[in-house]
Image (cartoon, rainbow, N blue to C red; front, side, top):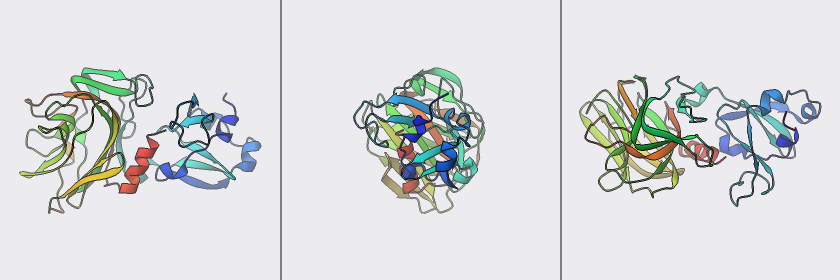
Length: 302
């Protein structure tokens, strides 16, 4: 069993994950030293990634030689240790409006929230994620994966978040494309259009709405965010709002149920499948605020 020293010496930035966890109304200083809280129920849900010897990799711990704890979606609790020690407990995902989450861990493509596991891998392998963790990201080489038909990204607001590393500028390659057919309630993100720009598009009721932003650099991990709120479509990159389009239609939405659901593939057969890596794909049924998206970004740096 891991030593109690792991969470006594670890310092975590609470603001980074404040909307996912909340502080229990209890001071654990006495309980910790009395071992009333079972270590097994907490430490087994967190991963120690060893000593941090790389500059800037430990921005959330006290110094470079401190032990880092990797935040995991599966963790139910974590400790803050400073002048006082508190237990933080994760909110139920329904309270955060998270509807689908594919964390991509240990060669798994399970949806740990909505039970819509990705399947039918075509020219897709598992690669190292942005931390160098083996088999913890998807790597597409003119390939794709499918998501089951079902309810996704319906209603008048939603958010999509993902970590992406683009390897080439294939014209109209998709990060995702969910629809009921060509030009039929399409929601998609293209990572590179004919001018190498990121393109977020919603086609609904014979109207075509889109917002674009300049190209991503190749072979660099980016945190991408896409929101719809009151008819406003927005693109966030690394926690910063980069562009918005007000469609003028506050009722802009698509049907909840999507029949054709792809990661890295277009419903249009003349568009290429993608050449990129991705990780931590999240769908929310609300438009996250800029601060919430920035918080999600900072969580992803653990």
